[in-house]
Length: 153
Image (cartoon, rainbow, N blue to C red; front, side):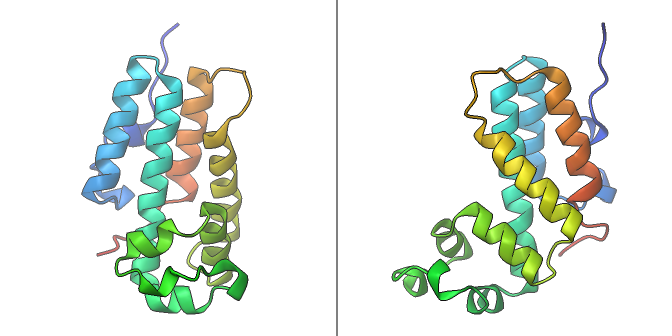
C-alpha cells in the first residue's frame, strides 16, 4: 500500500506555511526520517518545528510583554538574568508557554488544543510504537491549525 505524505512535508518552503529556515529544516528532517520509518524521530522533529514557530510568535508579540504576563509561580529566580529568548523560554515548561500563548491570544483555542496534543504525543511514554498513519495525521493537523496564515517577519 502506498501512502501520500502531507504537503507540508513534501514542500515546507511553500509560502502559505510562513515557516522560517529553522522550521523548514526540522520538517525536512521529519520527512527524511518518515521515509526511513524512524517514526519517533519524526515526532521529535515536528515538535521542534512547533516550538520554533511558537517562539517566533512570542517574539512577534513581544518577549518582554509575554514574560511580564507570566504568573509569579511560572517565573524562575534566574529568569530575569537570561538575555535571549531561547534562554528565557528554556526555563519555562512547554505547557506553560502554550497556556500563556492562549491567555495572550497569540494562538487560538483550537491551536491550544492541538499543541497540547502534540506535547503529549511527543512525550509518548507508552510502549506502543508510532505508526505511519499516526505521524501523517498529526502532521496534517499541524498544517491546518497551528501555522499563521500570514508571514511573520
